[in-house]
Amino acid sequence: MSKFLGAATVLSLLFLSPSAHAWWDMGHMTVAAVAYHQLTPSARARAASLLRLNPDFDKWVRSVPADQQDRVAFIHAATWADDIKRRDDYERGSIAHDGAEASANIGYADHRVHDYWHFVDLPFSPDGTPGASPQAPNALTQIEAFRKALASDANDDVKSYDLVWLLHLVGDVHQPLHATTRFSRALPKGDRGGNNETICLAFTCGAKLHAYWDGLLGDRGGPSDADTLAAALPTPDATAAAIDDPARWVSESERLAEQFVYAGPIVDGVGPFALTDAYQADAHRVAQQQVALAGARLARLISMALR
Image (cartoon, rainbow, N blue to C red; front, top):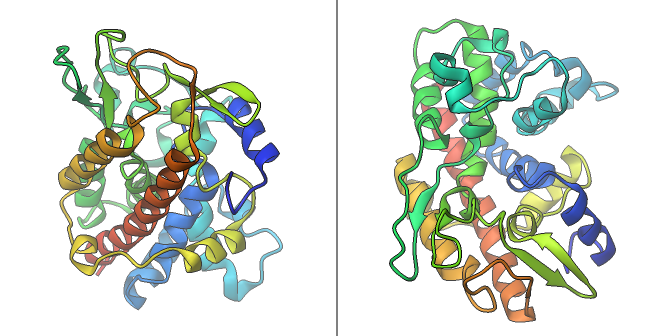
């Protein structure tokens, strides 16, 4: 199924990995690997100093040679916003539950998971079914907030926290199913970004459509593997890479979802839908292009904020 993972491994990941993650760890690390090599030297040095404030820094660089620690920490940091979902000392909640703290930006003292920061659900309907506007805060509001704070005179604890979130969220919004929810006659309340549809691959059915797209770059390996994947990605168009408006990034992802995610054999309903070879080829191509583009845009964002 993927040139990076064996079919059996991918199938197991589709069923076992949480569907709320975008790109899974390898995809997020690959976005960061692309970005790291495109940062300005000053931004790279400043980012390195900020990441040393993350509580997981020592774990990221354990047994890593000193001259490689900055790169490895930067790539690992892209998974931190998902890692905290599995920790007992972090609290999962909703926008309603978290209230005024839902959009707080207080640094590592914040032990809320903020699941709702990982996506922005632009409504899409192929048949005119009414949709619902995205709730806020969301991935778009937080990218804007964190980018602004990273370039401000905020304290370094907040800036470090914002940096690790930006490393993650820029990748999130380039995954098409983190930018839209489909409303249709069969799913009038929305499909939760592809989490309500299931698919069939090879001889196995029941994986979520969202999880399939999350896993297109795999979920096994470390920073060196992410560097290898990053080097093999297509070079994004320079004009597209220079777009620095996150709202446009989200709109682009939503259009890709319409064109490639909700394409045949994905029709109205919950499935399971048997994915064709042509669908999977398009999906892999789109995923690789989006990860490369996310990395280039992330590098530009960080370099501008930390110049």
